[in-house]
Length: 604
Ligand code: SAT
Ligand code: MN
Image (cartoon, rainbow, N blue to C red; front, side, top):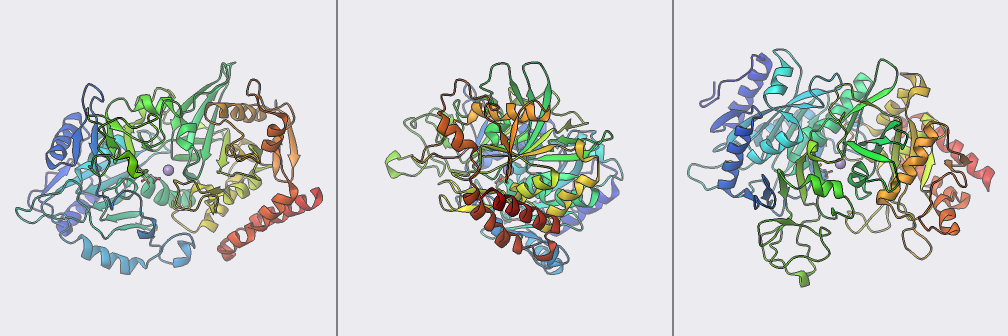
């Protein structure tokens, strides 16, 4: 046993052996098995405060809340350093970085040797999904970051309950994380230790995750994108289910009828706002089941059931306000870990968009006095909050139901100034998969790509699919053969961002998006009229409730317009995108493309 190895609170021989092996490799000073208790959380937080990693916010303003400022070079996921190490390169596909697994293992052995010297190694057992659910799955993250251990306690069901669920023989995904910043004897720590070199590595065949050099969000909280999407997507392919980058929303109509919707959007399309929507329509209610990830399995009745594998929200703070997302603001009133927001003079947090103008005396995310004249934002544009989902005033009571919730509709969306209607219903499952495979979004100033440039992000999974995306499309198509297709959710495409000739957004968005959801809801009950167009079914005249919106006839017409000439150009861009998948692209999607082209030809 490694000196200082805390006695393992489990009789799971495989887990104990693995923890000992990692401790022997990484050489921490101490090993701490997390139990997930409040006392443990407070002890780790006190340690982080003493190191300067966390700063307590004013307890009268934000009880139980803390602020972290990251190293300025460690502020986001690093896609260029993210690898899928499948045995064969083709199985990682053209959209992932690949490296030979043997070579990578050798490199990681070297990097991880002694990497935890001078630090505590936390062993963090966690459950993705409600405890006791058939849809849930377990993991254990080893990390030398207290910030990560505490954040995992917010974002997952972490500690003794997960360990108990694992029992003596259960399977778990092993995930090893290090800051890559060992401390020599007597060496002082820095507030945000990390390494300039970063590696975020997945071994899909053995279902392992190794992460080196970053303390930030998706690079370090390995239950989230690394497990719940990249590794889980591979598990889902092999086992016949779906691990998706989707919010889950519960809708209740004025008569009390309930439907559940899952939705995938590229970043900067208002996904969190939709997950916490406050409907503008009288009598309609929306509640949140999940804001980011959905795991979905076909149930005994043949329908698709979803759980939110996470227990918290790790959301982007900038842009969040009472006007854009009141539920989020209320969720954030206590027990939050903020990272890279600005700090106010009176011990609170602030970010761009929270209020019209910044309060005086702000400290920016880099710890310097904020100078509004500099043009630099006070909060980093990717500043984040981590908060328990149960605190959301709009959380659905069944959000932790082990059965999951039956999904009635799946939405895809993107930010498109032109061409794409406000809402389109797919003709059938395969057509819906075609829509998902071609999801594209235009850049905003906040995104990496240039404003107006089209970026493909199939199923909003581009950086998150743990295997060949062509095979992923085939897996989606195969779901129609796993149940009565009539029991599968119907698929829709939405675009809140269409602009008029004068450049303004035509659709008001936010709470008014409930009007689109209402049409979808009524379509599912065969109560709303639709018109067939070459690209799918759009609301028939009068079918979309726009009462009181003050939209002109011509604006409404633009919102729902499908121009065959414009769409012929749109369709013509697809083959170049599909070509990269070679023979891994399912023939059924080429058939969909041909059918679309033929419908457009007929319409011209
Ligand atoms: O950093 S996370 O991966 O958790 C969030 C995101 O970038 O999508
Ligand atoms: Mn996400």
